[in-house]
Image (cartoon, rainbow, N blue to C red; front, side):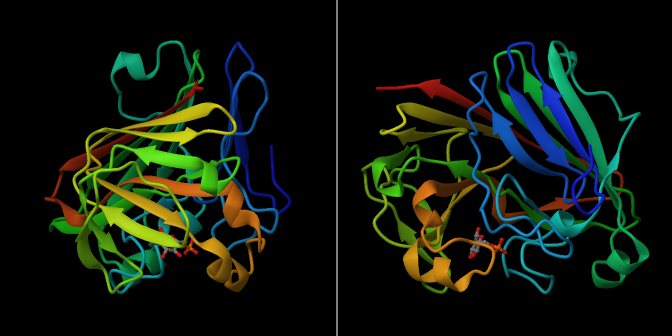
Length: 288
Ligand code: BG6
């Protein structure tokens, strides 16, 4: 299918009726629905589906830079590029294909990209939906240049939640984090699950490979599993910042929470010919 601007979107469906929608613009997942048709990702009612800005919601990919930690545009250029469908990707493990609906996308730098970031790469993204409704994103980034390069990365996942004051995150207790609201200074998290009562914009460092987001009111829990992605970004803009974003409703911060599998503090370095893989698996389970 095509969106209003003529950019292609791909819909994946599993036999039980769960679905995932991916846009070639940014290689961005824009929707993930369970078998009851409930949307699990947040997209702003004010989102702008028009280049050159990433859509506010779903799972934009931050690459090759996270945030403003470098000279590139905020969160890098990958989320603002039109990707192509990769019909013949190098093989993945059979368990990444068997019984799954999937699509492979490819991003290569244009001549203009090479002017601002002079590194030749192939970025392959597989988005897959399993029979049990699990959503998996596998990114493979290969250096096809003759010199090394470094990058940071995040799956900037906007979860749809009932109410920000009713959710908690488990799996980040006692970790160190960099606080983007305080000059990226380093702090240590206390022993309790993370709850929200104000703006949060943090990079938790070296977390375990599973994080849980409990939504008390909706009685469901998102499980985030990751590989190759040591860090976790947690972001909610809260009231004041929401009002300053043109593509975000004033009250919408209550219904979203970004929790990203990421590699930020220690950039990934690839030598010529080397490939990096970053994998994210999202699932949702009922909870009380
Ligand atoms: C977060 C950053 O991950 O993304 C925030 O840490 C930023 O500082 C947010 O505001 C949204 O970024 P953008 O570019 O999509 O508005």
